[in-house]
Image 1 (cartoon, rainbow over the protein chains, first blue to last red):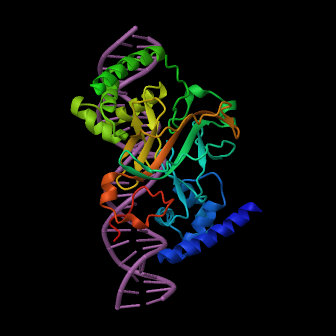
Image 2: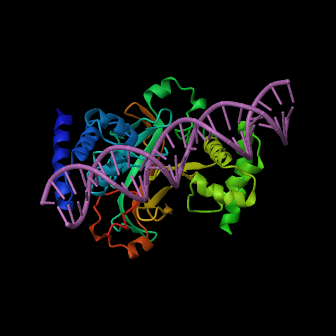
Image 3: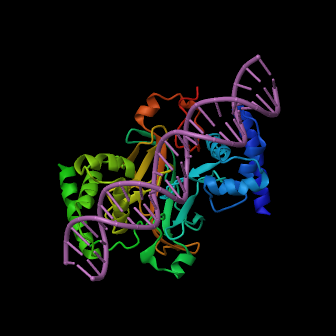
Length: 167
Length: 167
DNA sequence: CTTCTTGCAAAATATTTGCAACGAG
DNA sequence: CTCGTTGCAAATATTTTGCAAGAAG
């Protein structure tokens, strides 16, 4: 299956990235990356910790945070910015985009919209040197649409523009 | 100046939005929105609290969080998602995009890149109903570029902070 | 009155740091 | 031995909640 293949590929990538950066491939790093690569819901560090500890019983929350930071640094994992006040992670480091449900916080890969290439060639704007970008869409998932008591959205999810009766 | 005009406009907008939503225009709401509209660095709730308390001495941190939530809900303020694990806010609710410095966390409005209109007409993808989107660029600001031995920055590394103390 | 907001205290959530022990070169 | 990694405990940082007092209509 694809996920198996993806997972295998990620493990290879981890080995390679660790070698390049002079870092050991520890069981913790393997387990965390494997858990992340095995799901598509872009978990937070804590959610990942809850899953990884099933495999590696002794692992500590601190290690999960630290390993994720390392994996991001060596380019094997990407951190996803959302309007929620916590970091979420993705083992797919290719540039792709996400949609966040304002109702339940579900974060999905966005496929089916070709937004082309936004990266400016100059990559140099407003004094910044730009390295990357991502597009974040906000909306409501099917479930939350169905039960749309939109007026009482959870506070944690951002109610960005839902009732925008400007003018 | 423009900021004065913008601030005045925002206060009018607040009054209007509160009226529409049946909410009172409290001194706290005014002070918080005024403080936010008066700066362009997209502060977090805590940073805003530190500033607002200079004007409204008795205000509590809780109120700042709650008022910001309200202002977002009624469409007067937008919440900005970054890879940092905290929410940041913007009094400019028009769709525009931001660039986050991976070095120092500086968040700036991005001007000079015309991104065009990404919003799909259908606004219905992958089971989601899309309401909005934003583009987030990541890079390094001029200061961090200058002080950086970041020549070996991984192309896609999106760590919040470059480990500058890691030498 | 009724409704909403505010402040305070505390809880809940999210993340980071200091430090000693461990483990692979 | 030396270095980086891990686990544990504690410290921070961020955000939310329960509750009573107060203000506005």
